[in-house]
Image 1 (cartoon, rainbow, N blue to C red):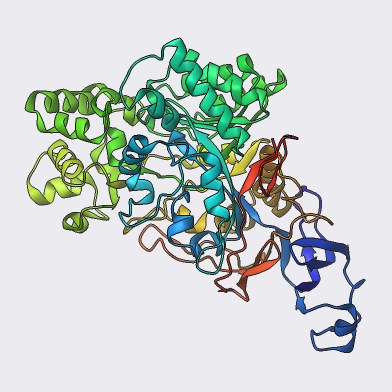
Image 2: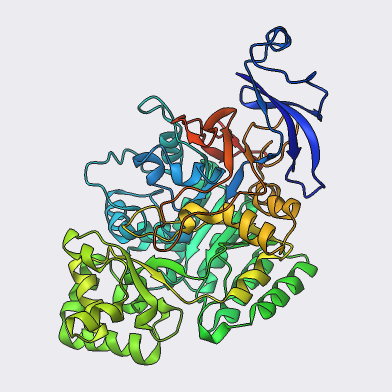
Length: 559
C-alpha cells in the first residue's frame, strides 16, 4: 500500500529539531519526506480524486502527532516468545519495531541436542519452556530462517537482530561446568562465534553472573572478542557485577574492548545495590575516559529502578555448575545446602553481584510449577513470615519445587543513577523485558513510552528530539542497520505516530500487562501493526542479518 501521512510533527531520529512534514510510505519503504502541505491540498481524503490519481491507498491526518522512526529495543528477551505468542502486543503497543535478541550469554542458537535441552531448562524463567514447541533449528542461520518463515499467515511481528550467546557456545564446547578451556576448546569456541556471525549474528553477548558464562576468565573472553571484532561486530556483556565491585567489572569490559579492538555495548548499564547509591558519575567518568582514548562504547538502560532475573541467579557460581540436575542435588544435600546458605547470607554470592541476599527485595514474578502460583507477588521474606520458615529455606524450597524456573523482581535500584546514565552521550534504550510469568516487570510493556512521557515530557530530562534519537538513530548506528532507524527517503518504513502530550506508560508493578497510552500507529516495514491505537494482527517483521559488507539488513546472509 501507499500511505500518505499529512501534517505530522517529524522527529526524524537524528536529534535534529522537529519540523512539520508530509511523508509517503510506499510499501516497505519511505518514499518521500517533504515539508507539510507539499503532498496535499486542503483536507485530502483517501476517497478523493487527488488521492486516487496519485495512487495513494490511504491518507492519515497526523495533525498533533509526532512521526518518528520505530523504536529499537537494544536488550530484548523475545527469542522464543516472538515464535510462541506471535502477536507480540507488548512490544508493538509501545512502538518497538526492531529488537536485539540473544542477550545475557544464553539463547537457543547455536546448539546441539544436549546443549539445547540444558539451555531450555536454564532460561525457562526468562522465556518459558513449552514441551510441544518445534525446536527445528540448531545453527544461528537456521534460527534466523525460522524467524523469517511464514507461519500461520505471517512472519514475526517485529524485526529482530541476534547476538551469539557466549554462555551457550561455551556449553556446546565445555558443558555447563567450571573450568578453563584447553587451546583446542578455545579455538572451537572462536570457530563457533565466527560461524554464527557469518550466518548473520551482529555480535556476541555474555552473562557473567550466569552459568556457564561466568566461568570464563578475561583471557578466554578476549579470544572471542578478537573474533567478533575482526568481523565488525560488537560485544554486549552482562558483566560480572552490578553491585559490589561494579566499577571493577565495568573496567574489565572496557579493557577487553580496548585490548581486542572489539566495539563494546554495555547491557542494562546500571549501578545497583546500596554500595552504589549516587555513584553513576564514577561509571560515566570511566566510560568518558575510554571514549576519549578512542574506545568504541555504547550502552543501554531501562527507565525503572528494580531489575528482573531468575531466582536461581542468586546462587553462587559453584552451586550452579553442571546444570539443573547437579544444582538440585546440591540443594538436596544438607552439607552443601549449608555452604550455599553461607555464601548467600554471609559472604555474598557472585551470582547476586557479590552482595548478601536481601530477602525483602526478591519478589516472585513467575513460576513454572502451578502449585507455587500463590507465591507470585510476594517477597521471599513475606513467604517466610507466612509459613514460619527461615527465608533461606523458602528460597531453597522454591528453587527445588520449581526446578530453578522461578522468575523474580529485584528491588535494588537508585533513581539518581538511572537518570544520570540515561543522559549520557552513548545511551540507548533497552527494555530487558521478560514476557512471561504471572507478574512480570512492567518494563516489558512500558519502557519506550516511559522514556517519552515520564522522563522527557514530565521531568524534562531529555528533549523529545534527544529521547527519540536515543531510541532510534543511535541504536541503529550501533547495529549498523542498513536504511533503518531514521525517517528518511529510501529507508525502511518502520515508523511510529504518537501524541507527545499523552504518550505514557500504563504498565505498573501491580498490573504490568497494560498497553501504553498515546501510541496511535505503528508501521513495521510499511504494514500497520497498530492502527488507530488498535492491534491489527499483522506480522511484517524480518530477521536482520549481518552482511559481508558489515551492514545489517534483511534477507539471506551473503558472506
